[in-house]
Amino acid sequence: MAENIKRIFGIDLGTTYSSIAYVDEFGKAVVLPNAENERVTPSVVFFDGGNIVVGEVAKESAKLYPNEVVSFVKRSMGEPNFVFEYDKKAYRPEEISSFVLRKLAQDAEQKVGEKITDVVITCPAYFGINEREATRIAGEIAGFNVRQIINEPTAAAIAYGATETDADRVVLVYDLGGGTFDITMIHIQSEAIQVICTGGDHNLGGKDWDDRIVTYLVEEFQRSTGTDEDILEDADTWQDLQLSAEKSKKILSQREKVPISITHGGERVKVELAREKFETLTRDLLERTISLTHGILEEAKKKDYEKFDDIILVGGSTRMPQVAERIREEFSMEPKVFDPDEAVAKGAAIYGWKLSINDELVKRVARRVKKSVEEVGKNWNTVAKEAKDVVEAASKEMAQDTGYTPAAVESSLVKIRDVTSKSFGVVVTDADNQEKVFNLILRNSVVPVDAKDTFYTAVENQRMVLIRIQETETSDEWVPLENAVEIGTAILHLPPNLPAETPVDISFSLNREGRLDITATETSEGRKVNVTIETTSVISGRELDEAKERSKIIRVQ
Ligand code: AMP
Image (cartoon, rainbow, N blue to C red; front, side):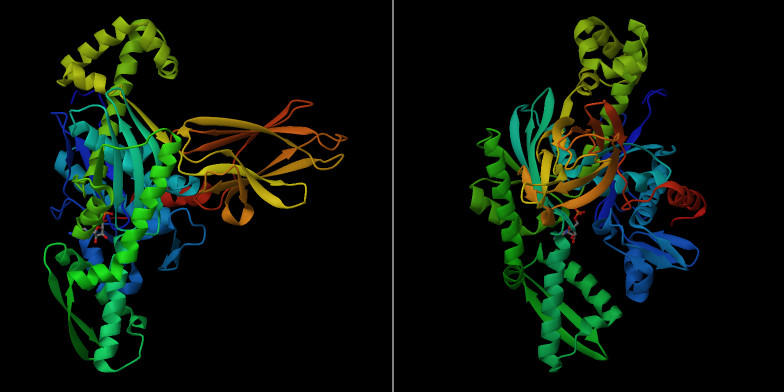
């Protein structure tokens, strides 16, 4: 790659495993193995005295030191109350995740021989505002310039799109990972990749399949030894069963049965688990993914997408043969298993590559049309139309400089349009004095999206309006308050002596990455406030600075 083009790495920060990829000199996305030569790294962190150990060793250490190891921290991203205490210090999910990111980058740097500064990180499609922000902050703590947070299924579709020659296809991405399930419909065309709609369950993944095996093993142990003791209360036994459950599950993807031994309190019980039994134990979990898929198909119909061409399976858990079998049966279509472990990181790398090529193209076009980079970047569509020749010449020149084909350079102009997986609104009081949520932005709207509505003050001489910003999973305009999550509040101060029913405009602006900006205007005097959402769900201010400082001196292994 030419010296002046910044390489942007793609990181799949997964619940159970993470990986990092980049686009090589030949324009191909490749995953970079870690120091242990594995292409995926367990997202597990072991606090080992002064050292932080990440990956396989940390995962194995969970057996011996269950209280010093953190797994599945992604499930707690954006949660204000999650802290892990170690050595009198409280660690929030962002900081713990930053250790995983550091390990990936450190090892990758060894392989590529350059410092990793800029990254694109993926997150599940239905991560809300706080979880996305937490993901970004994890990257910042690790010392990266986080160029963008993109959705995992979108990343998978980008990787898939890069391999498909037939440009116009509607695909369903069925992504069953370690902790999350995403189902997303995407329209891939030569000039754009458009997400149609997305849904899923952020508490459904391979871990739940493991848990079913664990429960079964406990029952078998109890039956065999005649005890009614809850052996999971013993932290060592719990860890042990978790690890053997996951191992056995993976073996069952290859074989018909697996022997498992359970050791607890000096007793040992041997169990043979058959694939058929495993499928029975977990059938309802699989069925839930099917019903969520139907939900998305219904939503797609509302957007005039009546059918799809392919189902692609991504995420490690789609290796379980029953997944493809059930999909085949339900949709009478052969699902395509597409790079289950690597598609997301590769897609993020391709996205990063497009960003870097695009940045350079904008720079070169700006130089030629004698305008600032910011101006050209902002008005790219107009510039690209009015100065088509200039864009073509700059693309050709870049192709020469970088060694990529002009077509590859121009492919960086492919637009990627995503949708919001949540609805956003405010709390209003209805005529019966009941508090409800009114959604200004509805789920599955194409982002970026702006929305504005007018609300009215309740009483005469009201001096302030408390704006309570809510996030919901439905696509209804009105939602009961108990079904919403408050993501922040803001206050609009009003001048004295306004009559009741004074109009107040509230505007929401959701950017491509899921960041929400809010403006409130009292229309009679044009008093306007830009509302900053106050949230305690992510690290900010001094706490963030401290975490960044700590990160500089903590060694990750
Ligand atoms: P991901 O988050 O996409 O990396 O997926 C990780 C999940 O995939 C974990 O729950 C793994 O246990 C699961 N997984 C990985 N390989 C297999 C396999 N061969 N069979 C069943 N599950 C697997």
